Every structure is written in C-alpha cells, then in structure tokens.
Amino acid sequence: MSQFNDQHLAVNGQASGMARGSVAILGSTGSIGQSTLAVLAAHPDRYHVYALSANTRADLLLEQCLTWRPNFAVINDSTQASWLAAALKEGGSSTELLVGDEGLDAIASDSNVDIVMAAIVGSAGLQSTLAAVCAGKKVLLANKESLVMAGPLFMAAVKASQATLLPIDSEHNAIFQCLPQSKFSESPEQINYDEIKKILLTGSGGPFRTLPLDQFSQITPEQACRHPNWSMGRKISVDSASMMNKGLELIEACYLFDCNPSVIEVLVHPQSIIHSMVEYVDGSVIAQMGQPDMRTPIAHALAWPQRIDSGVQSLDWRQMNALSFEAPDLERFPSIRIAREVANDTTSASIIFNAANEIAVQAFLDIKLSFLNITCVVEESLLKIPSSEPSSLIDIKEVDAEARRYAASLIDSL
Ligand code: NAD
Ligand code: MG
Image 1 (tube, rainbow, N blue to C red):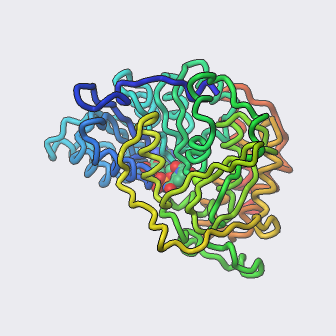
Image 2 (cartoon, rainbow, N blue to C red; image 1 turned 30 degrees about the horizontal axis):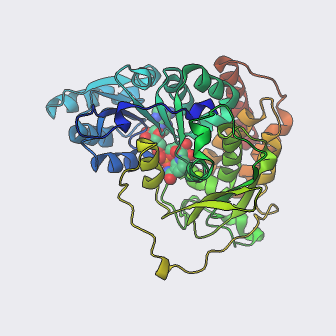
C-alpha cells in the first residue's frame, strides 16, 4: 500500500504562511470537475487553480478560465481551439491554451502542480492520469476506468514514483477512511487482511432497483440518467443503472486496496447514506456516512490527512428514515457477476470489460442499443476476444482498441 504514503505536501500544512497547493483538474467541465471547483472556491487561501481542461465544452471552459485565471487550459477538441484562444484574449485572460493529449500530459506532469484531480470520464483519462502518477503527484482518482484498464501498470507506477493516490469514488473514499489509517503511514506496504473479515462495497441499486426485468428492454437514456440519489455525468449514470458501475468499482477496489475480490461483498443500500464499510475479525464494522454529495470525498482527498469544510450539509438524523440493505439481484443485474469473474482474471479481461462497456453505453445513449443489450455486448466481447497479458501502455491501448472494434461491430450486427 505504498500509494498512501505519509507524504506531507505544503498544501497540507496550516494555510497561513504556507504556499498554496497548486491544482490541475483533468475534466474540469464535468460533474466531478465542477464539484471540485465548488470546494476550491471555499478555500482560496489553501489552493490555487493552475490548470483546467475540457473535451468539447469550450464555452464552459472559457467561463471557468475567466473566473479562475489558471495558468493553463487544455481543450481536447482541436476544432474549437482557435475560437477559445480568441475568446480568452478578448476576455483579457492570460491563460495559455494547450490542445489535446499532449496538453493534458503537460498539465498533469507540470512541475508547478502539486495536486491532480483525474476527472476525465472513461479510457480517455488513462494517459493523463498515468502521467500525473508517473510525475509523483498527489492524484485524486475519480477516473475509475483508468485503474480498471491498467491496474497492475498503474499501481506499479504509483509505487515507483511515490505518488500519493487518493480515491474520489465515494465508496472507495469511504473504504479508505474505514481502513486502519496507520497502514497508510507507519507500514504503508500492506494492509493486514488477517484483521479484516470483509469490505462491504455499497451501492444504491440505481433507478431500476425495483423495476421488473420484463420492462428493462423499454428503458430510455433519460430514465437511466435519472439517478435517485446522485447527480452525475451521463456515462456513469448509465453504469449505475446497469450496476456496471458497481462491477467497475469492485475491480477498482481490488487494485486500490490490494485485495482479493473474495474480500469484497457488494451490498445494496438504497438511501446512499453509508458509502461503504469495513468489517474486522473482532466483529466491529466501521462505516463512513454522509450526504450523497461528491464534495465530501473531494474535500477529504484534497486536504488529506487534514480535514476542510466541503460545503456539504450535515445529515439530519432526526429526519432520517430507516437505512435498509439488500443483496444485489444478480439475475436482473448480471454485471456484478461478470465483474467478479473479470476481477479474478489477471489477463486482459478487465480492459475488454471496460472498453466494451464504454462502446455499449454510448450506443445506448445514441439509441442504437437497448439497455438490456449493454451487458450482453460486454459478456459476448469477453467470450469472443482472445485474452492476452498486456504489460505496457501500448499493449493496453491495443487490447482496448480491439475490444472497441469488436463491440461496435457486434452492436451493428444486432
Ligand atoms: P462528466 O461526463 O460529467 O465529465 C467528464 C469530463 O471529462 C468533462 O470535463 C469532459 O470534458 C472530459 N472528457 C470527456 N471525454 C474526454 C476526452 N476524450 N478527452 C479529454 N477530456 C474528456 O463525468 P463525471 O460524472 O464528472 O465523471 C468523471 C469520472 O469520475 C468518471 O470516471 C466517473 O466514473 C467518475 N466518478 C464520477 C462520480 C460523479 O458523481 N459524477 C462519482 C464517482 C466517480
Ligand atoms: Mg462510486
């Protein structure tokens, strides 16, 4: 567990008289990116926004640049670069505009940056997140797909560079908080799993938790994106609806906490008040609770090992109805079963799992694939694409591309 080392950054010292932590946000226009800016807005004495980035939303990136005055901004869509450069100039901004993957890699590894929020959605976030890790940054990991795709390589890079990796996914952030904190500082090499009975990875069950299976084929993107508890980007919203998100999170947790999948139990908790738990061998269960609001894990990770105000309201215990729990329904949500098989597989399976899911989710959002067929495309891709043992980023990208091609042709043939 060397990733959670006891590295004390200037940013974690007392705010007065200390240098401010310099933050780069990969994906600042997204849901996590905007929540990160909301937390940073409350702590101008502690943090400085050094770089922001967007895929296509140049108008929002412009607005963010005019508000935050970062040193750099990166736009992925090169067709919008000249418009954005002109608009920045016209707005009197001195922000330097960079373009594409090279720009993202540059801000992720810039020597002036202390903290990188990795909040790009999907495999598009892998390269820049890895660049931040390799540069030894304090990396706040929202982009779970990068860990699912490249777990062994990613964690080896964390170890080699002594980057500080902090989970933003609310469940993983909760598990991090429930695990013995001494493990992250005194003996960072390992968590003693002899002391831990299980990790309880909770999930709300999504918008279709109680919907009969025979109605799944009529589910629309709008319904799938209407999550009962969380407000999120469209891809993760669909993943939550199919519970593929819980599957991705199961794999993410195995890498983050260096554990066997059998240690992790998925538990449905519809109210999303408990964000995950750790059960110890003595019978103690430690849970992390709070409002379902991503500003809490973001603030936790930004300030770790200290604590700062996130702007999130307290839980109102007197207004709270019963907290309930149930086992996931593996017949209606086979994604969890598939993910468990993938988590037990040390070959290219997790790359195929992630890539096929990304293609299938996009096809569903584009009304080219039914909701039920998302899981079918993932399972069929896992069955048909020969497994390999990728050992480099190039190998990983090749498997990713092959799985995307296969999944896309499968969708066309349906
Ligand atoms: P989002 O769709 O709202 O935002 C995605 C961001 O990534 C945007 O800023 C977009 O411009 C950028 N982006 C997309 N494609 C890109 C590309 N090809 N190149 C460069 N930038 C690109 O997504 P989100 O909900 O903020 O989720 C971001 C990540 O955080 C995902 O991996 C998701 O699983 C994870 N996450 C999100 C939440 C949540 O509450 N939203 C919770 C836990 C984990
Ligand atoms: Mg989550």
